[in-house]
Length: 314
Image 1 (cartoon, rainbow, N blue to C red):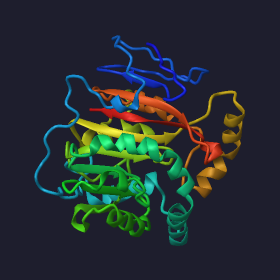
Image 2: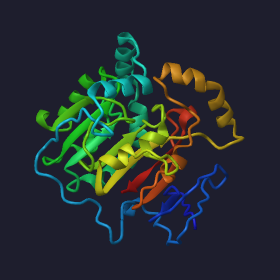
Image 3: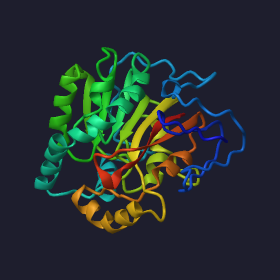
Image 4: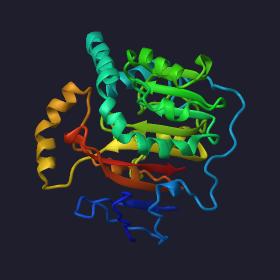
């Protein structure tokens, strides 16, 4: 499979149908083994979400919200089980820490957001008029809402393990023009999403897989026996949109720096890992509609400059 490189557009990797992909760090970043060959995707990001015969999203329900499920993975689960999962996968921080971290993100991410704005605009533009129910995992202070929440028909579930984020997320929702009754903040984790199966049109995650404790369970890597949470809540034909920072190339100076800083990063930045190969996890997650992954460098936060972004289809 050919990897397209251009000074104006980052490389795009497309894996279709029942593809099993493996990304290895190298000078070319991506080497993919597939069971079936497909033509490479266009380098233009305008065509990032082109799905051929598959419709991007299927029809959506007319009600703005579905009830929050106390049972997450099976009918016998309980609300207390959901709480146990949250405490296990994302141990509770002191209130002062959660409040400070939420405030910090609301005040000191402006330069980063400005740098990635062009990618977000093109990525989230694919949702406008096509997704009426959107789940954002790790919504944080809501910096993404302005890109997709202005549509009067959209309803948003915002999941985050930090309850102190709700104030800022609601402010961002209001600024984006999202009516209060169409935004629901849910105190939960990506490993256990309290929504029904096939209940949302799109799932969004930006800078979240670095901090979930079990990436395999959140994305359902194909080798893992339990079902995917992201795929579980997506309707057939739905899309998972992501922007994540990833580990730098093996042997690079940046990777050495990340290895040294990783333990401190996890303490200071609420469980954020610097050395995760998130692009690999997404490729291996078994999104049968195909995955399209781009690599970019973001310089406003040097030690997490390596990023991937794109779309995976159910």
